[in-house]
Image (cartoon, rainbow, N blue to C red):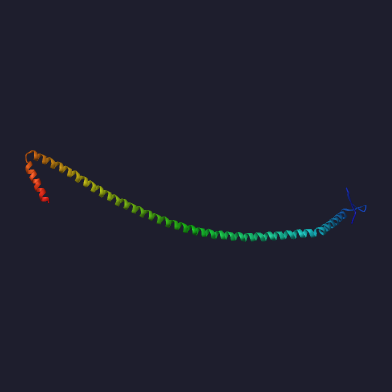
Length: 177
């Protein structure tokens, strides 16, 4: 190896001063030796580093591709589930509407039956009260007739026709037998 000494004015080789071109050549030679040693010592670790980095990148790329495919499958599954849920929702809504209509009809028919029952009961109550009122009217009429008859009999008895009235009553009683 060369013994190079750097002085403020230039490069000295074995104590001799070199020209600018020679100095440049020595610098190139020195750089080449340094570069050669650097390559010699770093060739295996650098190659291993880049190989490992390439493998890592390939593994990450394969993993990302696998993740993309899995994501697309999940999206398709979710879309199928959404379609299934939409059709299920439509069925549920249809069934709910059918049930609501059926319940509505049941309520309407029940209300009609209840109304008919109330109407029939009202008619029975009206008929009973009418009959009751007629019986009350008959009772009042009978009382009035009896009162009038009693008044008429009292007047006839006062007028002196007591014996005729008693004879007629006895005759009427005999006829009733």
